[in-house]
Image (cartoon, rainbow, N blue to C red; front, side, top):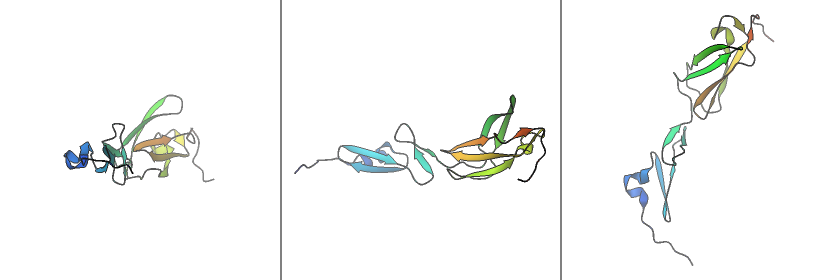
Length: 120
């Protein structure tokens, strides 16, 4: 029978973990609360959801630099449709705004220059 003599690393400075510290034999493992992901340093937590005010920069059409400021909170994996015309008046149809690992992505593949909005 193997046993482990262990000090609880979580007792001192939460084991260096930003959120949760889980003591294991010979060390500790950090984890994060809901809505957060463990960062590359294995101690810090970063937001997994996208929060209101987050900005995404992208190219619309072949050469129009554009940006979108998220106007609501969006959970990780969530998405919604957004009018391309609100991004640039010369475009129609809808873009997909989605949240992935705390980053806002705007998919403008359905946006078309100088076309009329229509319901399909």
